[in-house]
Image (cartoon, rainbow, N blue to C red):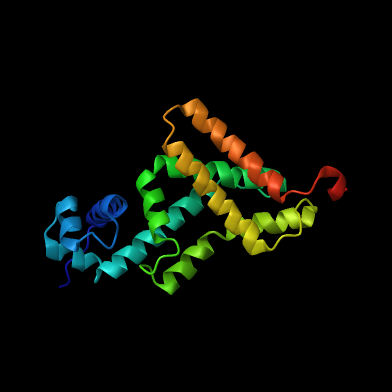
Amino acid sequence: MPRSLSPERKAALFDAALKLFAENGAANTLTADIAREAGVAAGTLFLYFPTKQALINELMLKLAREQAERVTALLDPRLSARESFSAIWNTTLNWFQENPHAFLYIQQMRDSILITPETVEESNRTFAYYYTAIQKAREEGVLKPYPVELIGGMLYQDMVAVMILIRMTPDPAQQAAYIQQGFDIYWNGIAREAQEAA
């Protein structure tokens, strides 16, 4: 009879891997280190993830889904395009602040050869709300005529720039100011002027 796998143990392995990958880099972290951090035998990890690559990929997808769930829960079709972008911006940065290891891991994995193309494609699907917000803004006529990929890519990269600044700033009031200022810079860069949109 096959051994049943414990969801708690799998969660502990995810947590241990995330911590070590964020602190040491995925390439520099051994599976034995992950097992030790999770408090399990080295061979136990392979019952849950057949390879280190499988763990790297599954962890990336887990984090993408968690982040997407947080953002989509706050998006409402009645929001204006600007309000939708603001919700995505604020919620993503709040999630990154609450999950600093996730932020570091995602940064490390983004554009990395350490995750498979299939994982990249699947994680990109979880962020469809970016493109829904862009489409909404296009329908409202409030965006400059930039390529969708550029608007979406700059949204993410601008959030990363703000997050890096926030991580160096201990004052919560200053962090909140950077979040708002960063959004203003981003929005003003992609939005048409009022008279241009009219």
